[in-house]
Length: 211
Image (cartoon, rainbow, N blue to C red; front, side, top):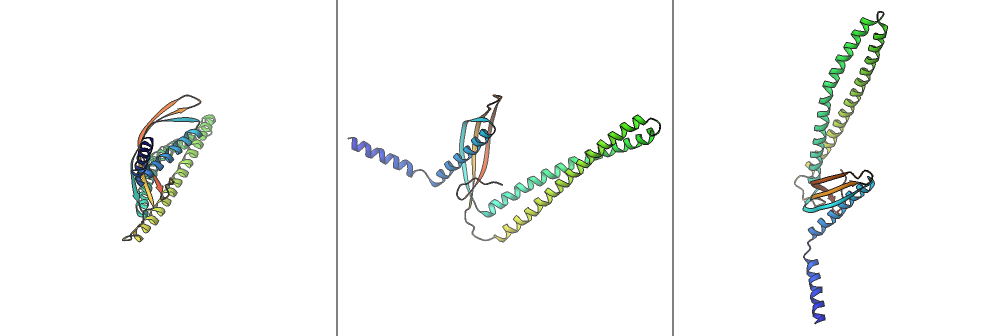
């Protein structure tokens, strides 16, 4: 009787292992690696993380064109952000230019008559000039970022076109999961709750990809 029960137990274990598909194994690997990334980040931040829920939702197979298309979407998002930042600088620069003009007129009026006021206007003029210079530097940096994004996008576009009509092997995976967790700062005991549906990308060997 004991031998029969032992054999049945072994068969049950074997069937359980056999019923685990390659995709399920990959999703479990992805889940463990993502959890480890979160836990390591929490540890470095001197915090703890408690998993309330962590559910694997999907695992999509991707080829090189899929990944490059996703990269182009990310680049477009960045370029949109940089463009909006540039637009926000324009009214700031316009206001500073008006202030600088006002300070300049005041300096001309007060110079030689009310030197203390003239000196104050000069100092405020200098502050406004420094702020304007910072805005110019920020604008130049944003322009450079947009130019770099545009260059990278052009390269990706060419790569995608060159692979057109070719049979491309699966080289990447997109892992989708639902996460519900509680983070606690060890020093302050401050608690922050987190809930979201997330996507992560892995290479063919199930190593998390860095964009």
